[in-house]
Image (cartoon, rainbow, N blue to C red; front, side, top):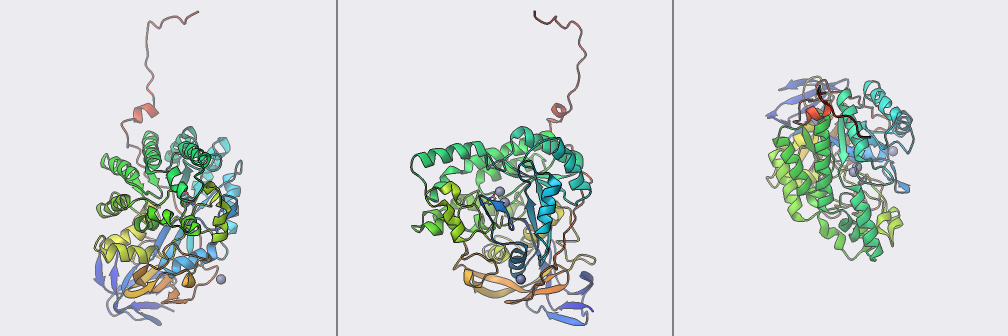
Length: 484
Ligand code: DUC
Ligand code: ZN
Ligand code: ZN
Ligand code: ZN
């Protein structure tokens, strides 16, 4: 049994060329002209690209007194419908919970996944057990990334001492630290002030977390990672201040990656000033949507390469869940959806406008993150031996995005009414057709956990501060007697 994708143009992060792709046993076995197999998929007029990888999703996540509404079944189905063939979710240990216990809980959620998945492990507190368990997580559990929340004070947030200790541990283990970079202390104090002054509507959420709190935290995390001698991945980079910090660090030779979200690239802060409370609350996420100036900065970063990956932070809450925050914006569950719409929206607003080439599109939706997460070329590649996670992309297919036709289980879509041109004709997950135009053929339980090995060579030579990390003892004579 073999499948041939016939008549298409292969588009990878670096090449565009006409060839057929033959698949057997879930893997690409041959690429070339005039291939034949037991089954043929017609790719005439289409681009054959590595399936999207969304490295930032929260499926069935316990958060702000509820659970995000898409689970591994509906979330991966939404992803596949939009050409995304792998997701990476965040395992969040509760207070005092062991990392390994939390991982077991997360693993239990995945039995109905339709596409492959992996986990980042969050460090939500610091003690000797966490220090020890990190090694097991990296060596035995196939997880090479640790997430740190610099915001959500009193819940997920870690302090600088904890974060710095964890960064150093990541350096030892060959793991990559991730940060949610917002200054949680300042957000908490601004939130309290806004509420005390009677600003309790969803627009106040944006006032409570201005770009400065993100820029400050991004800078701080970069400096601490540099001191620890470890690369850094900054999730949901939403503003110029954070982008500037990343740009500067990269220019100095530091290995720092920035991840804008499709929502921040295409939706702006005016969404919060809609008169309708539900409209604004549905768009409450952290960081919040920004002004057009910040959007321009993010697009420029993708074009110039200072920003590396486009993700979604898919964390979907229903309107009823959002209404927990009526009268107090700080209780609106933070999060928006985007899994199904990331590729079509980025194609429409990036490739169709000329901001991104097709190859850059593949780089920022799939190949770059596969390399950053150390799963390339199993994922993120159209190469012999790679998993056949493939999207056959029809650049002429259009639709109007609507909650009525989406796979996500929530009752609205933040992109409602937006026209997109460029959609999957087929999405294949390890060689199986999961999407054929608008027909969903996903198979519950098909998705497998993707193990990610530690990095052989974490860049230990990042910093001029290295000597501070490894202090040099000074032999001195004539030390004065201590005071009495
Ligand atoms: N931001 C969100 O909007 N939701 C989930 C967590 C986060 O950091
Ligand atoms: Zn976050
Ligand atoms: Zn997130
Ligand atoms: Zn189902």
